[in-house]
Length: 288
Ligand code: DHB
Ligand code: FE
Picture (spheres, rainbow, N blue to C red):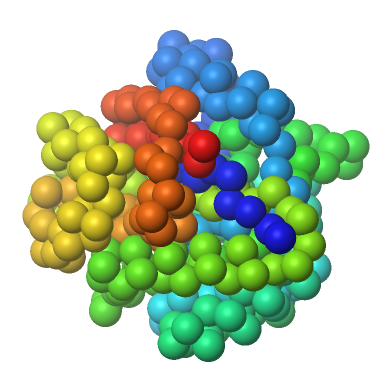
């Protein structure tokens, strides 16, 4: 049986990827941010899964206003890092897991979530920056990512976006899907994006430390209550792009305690401002 062993949560600011690609991680601005991921890189080496189910959002890269799936699962064998205007990031190609992804698609759709199935797409900073933060610098010619990835794209860019409640329920369906896969696989689920940020309008640059940290506390202790936070609260308190946080609820919904199991162990928690316009939040939760 495949098993969800842990969930990882992290912001995905594109400038973090650029800082890594351009060798700026030790500059005074960036050093404290990257220091917050030292533990995580070691943890990743000690707890390398077979597959990461990576919940992220596409930023009008693979999708556009022409086509806006609410929830899209990648069933391809490979995904190329996207060119977002400055050329593709110099990171390895992302290897998929078509068998597990197809199984999850079948199971989750039969649990009444209408997923879009994607057999070809490039993956943008929403997916590659979390990989870089957790795995460190990788040479696209000589290195590989240490696990396979199932990309799961959520529309949090163009309204209407899904509710936290729907995302939390979807995470629960994903857990059932993973646990009904026959092969013994170690699977992690990652929720990415957030925390507070607003990139446009009069409130551009908004950061709300108190709200972010209270939300993290609640995500750990009472995820079902966190799932009830209405969409308008994210916009008001966390800024227009803070809505990316609903993706963390998909990962949280797949953890054992939501299904009658024990509480997860908080292995790591980190919060840092600023990284570009964003408050960076990061957490590792392990199922016991
Ligand atoms: C920034 C953050 C994001 O989540 C994003 O998708 C783009 C930019 C930023 O803070 O610059
Ligand atoms: Fe984003």
